Image 1: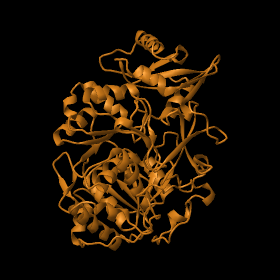
Image 2 (image 1 turned 60 degrees about the vertical axis):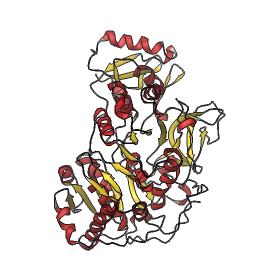
Image 3 (image 1 turned 30 degrees about the vertical axis):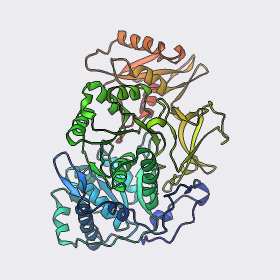
Image 4 (image 1 turned 90 degrees about the horizontal axis):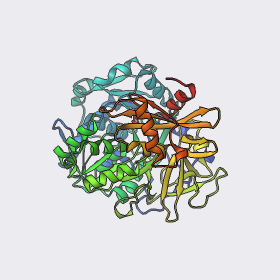
Length: 537
């Protein structure tokens, strides 16, 4: 199934007009019970109908509690304002800028109910980056937390109106709007959001997702792996502008009729405090945060957790083992992508094999392919390929032909599948280092270094070498109690040699104050590769 699209409710046809050519779509799979959706649906209406109006829905660290009914009413008033005062029509793109808080969620639901297309951005983006998003998405309107309006006003939005909220314009205006709003009768395959890739390789790409896609990630990964309950309280650190956060902190809890604690910003230590204070049961965050929480030694703060999900970056086996030993909780690892909207390979409970990412999530299928697109034998590294009820659709981007080949979504990751069907991550394809004829996976070296007590975090890339072609170079951030000295560099090299094959050890070690990261927290490896290639100090 590819491009048999239903009649659109969009009066502004920009998104449909810029879908990829039919021949560049991935094969779509809807054979899992529960993923056959009606031809017409508005995902906002479906999600808000999952619980009684008086059930708590959105919580904040400051003590705010929004019920499902309050979120319904507030988003209705905003939807009325957007259509009546600002002329929003179905298909218009609305840029959203705010940290994770109830007002951002209410605005997201309002846009979606009104048939608009949500373009939720990271609060850390600056004016130049926001200009790029606005240019690619051709936004018609912007809704912004008043505290974060500075960069947006400096951005080149082409004259697009900016409406602020949070004790500001929007708050006072919606009181005059009706509390009822009839959601637009959108098609299940109308575009509902544009999610931008995090820019780890340069200019971001806009990925286009349908109303049915939003429900599909909840009805696959969440329902069958996370297995939420209506009594759960979710929390975590990924922003809602990152699809990992949109799913884990908004779509999944609401699809289950549960609640979510929205955190604007928190260190791993602060996150652990909030988990204890609110008795959080489900957490979504990155591997580095779980590792940092373990290092605090105060794991009693996490005793309320029954589920902990790790994604966004590779989860080292050592982090999994340390977290399990300290809490008894088995971290749910997963790989997903902005292009696929959320996680498509994972495992939970007794299906978990530490060190392996897991199995294809119910509803998805996966394969490891060679350069010709043919499956490789188990145990052989190759290109990870995925199909399911979600798939890559870039907005007017020639890179569509690279991501989708032969009906498969090619994620850009190098994987090995074992004889039992488990998928094991090696590296991003551009993170494989070839040194003197040896293939070295950067994450394997990083994992070897990460368990040294002096290492706070590290990243390994290829550095040019006249004799070996490339050598392994490690950029290391040290713990506060250690000094970044040549002796420590030599110690780390010997430490790595004792844990992995000696040819894999980092021949170069450079200490840095921090690693360059995207607004979603992913390490910008291309920045470090360029730095290593340029021999910069």
